[in-house]
Amino acid sequence: MKYAIYQMDVVVADPKANRDKISKWIKQQIEINQPDTIVLPELWNSGYALDQLEEQQQLFVLEYMKDLNGTSAAIRANYSEKTARQQASRLLSNVNIQNAIAELKAERNERLSIDADYVIKTIVETIERCSQAKQVYDKSGELVMTETPDGELAPAYKYDASNVLKGAELLGKHLGMFTDKVEVSGGMAISTISDLMDDLADDETTR
Image (tube, rainbow, N blue to C red; front, side):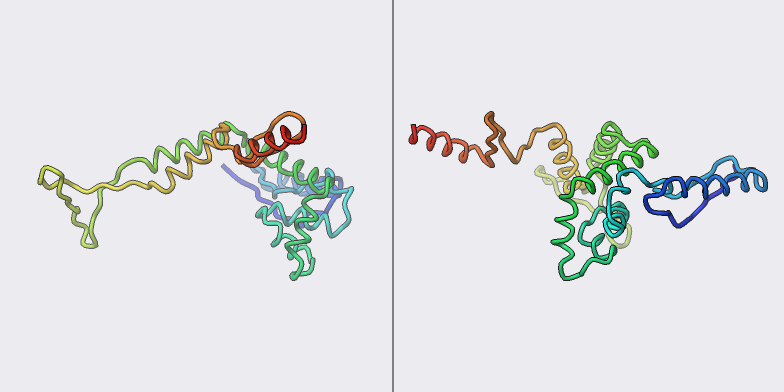
C-alpha cells in the first residue's frame, strides 16, 4: 500500500484557503504517485468559531489543542509568561473560545472514531491487563520465591495495583459513582452532605 503524507502551515480561520491548498496537492499526488491512502495534518481545515476570535485568541485555541494545557498554550500564543496562568483562565472562560475548542475536539474525535464507548473499552482493557499477576524475577533472572503461611516456598507474584485503582476511579467517575458535588432543586449546589444539612438547618432557623 502506498501512502502520501502532507505537512502544511494551517491558515488560521480560513478553511477555504486550506481546502484549496490541499486540493491542489492531492491532485498532484494522484497524477504523479497514485497513492492508496492520503494522510493530512490535524486541523488542516480549521475554521469554525475561530473566525469570531481575535488573531491571538485563535493562536491560543490552536496551541491549546496540542496538549490541552492552558498555561503552556497561552505562553506559546505570545501572552506574557508572568500572567499566562491568569490569561489562560480568562481565555478558557470565553464562550467563543469554548465553542471553538469544542468544535475542533468534535472534528478530531470524528476523524479518529473516538467516542465514550471507545474510552470505556480502553480503560477496561487496561485494568484487565494491569490486574494480571506477573511472576517476580531477580536481577540474575532467577524466579523469586516466597514463603506461604504453611511454610512452603512458592513463586512470588505482583500486579499493577496503582493503575488498576486509577482505571477503576475513571470508570467510577464516568458511571457517576463518585460525586464531588450534591445538586438539589432550587439552584443550590452543596459541596458535601454535611454542608447540605447545615444549609437546611439555617433555612429552618430563618423561618
